[in-house]
Image 1 (cartoon, rainbow, N blue to C red):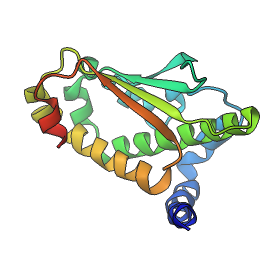
Image 2 (cartoon, helix red, strand yellow; image 1 turned 90 degrees about the vertical axis):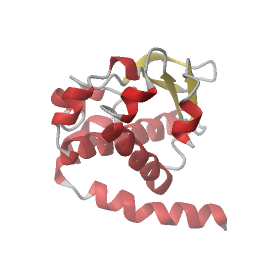
Image 3 (tube, rainbow, N blue to C red; image 1 turned 60 degrees about the vertical axis):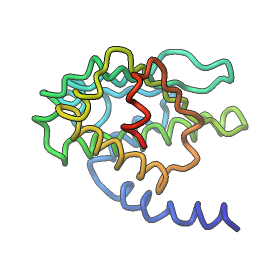
Image 4 (spheres, one colour; image 1 turned 135 degrees about the vertical axis):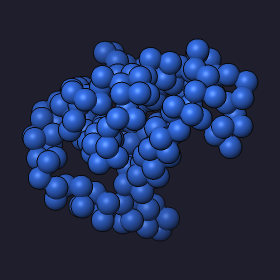
Length: 172
């Protein structure tokens, strides 16, 4: 009963996204994609100038797709120049394409395929995150809520490494 309630709750979120015309090209690309190409996302040309997130070629030892982010390579000045709408559509597109690729891989492999997110925090300053990166942290928080609301089956694991000592306080 809990699972069906959770899945039912995701439907309005997914339907609203699917109905938006700006995602038609993304859905058409994803219908045959075997991997994630973030250059296909809405506003990718502008967002990727400042954002370090990339999807890696290859798989985990469990055969799951991997996404890697290294915040020390983010250009927060570039990201802060972008509107909330542009960043939001990019993130929504990222979630949707990840979902569609995982769904197609799940069908092909006859098992549930989920993403593994890796975050290398080496060289990132908590002070920088709380100043220049604060807006992106807020966007990340909203994205996590969107994952919980619309894509709960998509994320297998988040691996955070090289975290500074103050990192746990930031995410508490």
